[in-house]
Length: 264
View 1 (cartoon, helix red, strand yellow):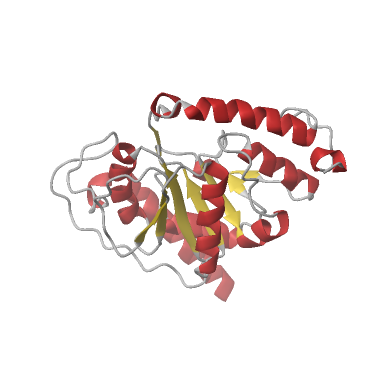
View 2 (cartoon, helix red, strand yellow):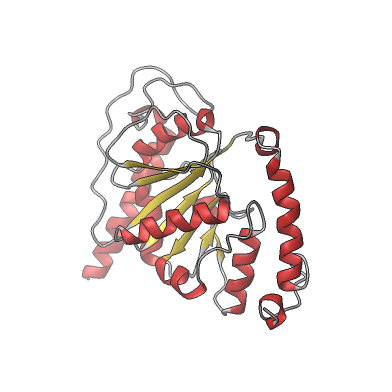
């Protein structure tokens, strides 16, 4: 009976949040009239979110960024509303001028661009070291459009090794246990292919991953990574070559059961 009541409680909350999404005017208390696609300028009715259920697993958000503060800034205001009880860690690879200072936003600054894989490693370890069981890694040019209850509810009832957006790794949730078993991201991938490498390593470990519609972002924004950072194109080509060397083929055509076929 207790389990039945708990399930009814969770269902009611999910319906409540769905209704709120149909009326964004009541939930975007932190947007402050800032204009970007999907926002609703003007005065808002104050929205006080419920406390994060203690039985839900703890998670935190990690976002690496490089020269995209113009895209990330308005999204952070949204996340403050969507995740009122969740810490957000920003790894800044570009020494950007950051204007949002809030207790739950934590900045990790790097003097130079350390690459995506290294950024994900630092963010994941930081999140786990803070006592969280899951890391939610997001691109800085997307807006997820979900809230902490929706994510926490799914993590509470679903048991998987890794969850990602249906198309790519613009949004991915990594359990601490998975990270500890599979290991960190290969930091020799400076840009691109680090996600393919991790998925293949999951496959070799017999773990696999789950594509979640819940992680499909509500909003994609044009990032122009290669236009802003021409070196990213070279890193992409280098990463592709390294991937083929490491696994004997491109993603989907790997031949080696061990990195470099066990020769290194």
